[in-house]
Image (cartoon, rainbow, N blue to C red; front, side, top):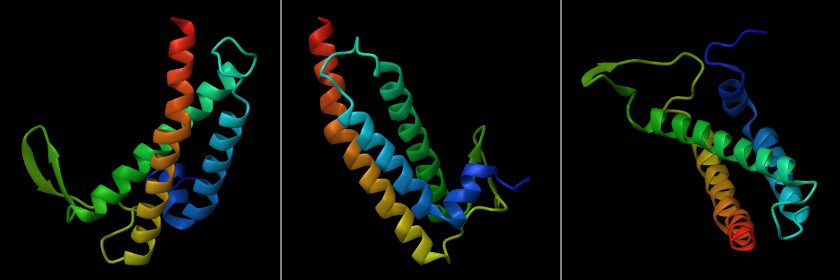
Length: 126
């Protein structure tokens, strides 16, 4: 199934709660699986889930910024107006509010538990 802007953008535009709740749950499980040092059997899984969450957050940030900027995009220093078919627009205020709230929840999780976990790994590795 092809989508105008890609499957993740489509999911964020059509059913963000499902995607973001799943990412948050997986991130919480990753933190629970942490044994306090980077040489555990779960290290690869934990790092993969952290990278996944950060990438999903960057997609969220793009969608939110794109809709707020009035569809003004910069490309090599030249301004032009462009719409990206399949992305929400500024008129979809309920969706954008939900996306912003979800991004804040994801950012909070990354900055609190995940950040503490990774800093503990760094200290242990020194």
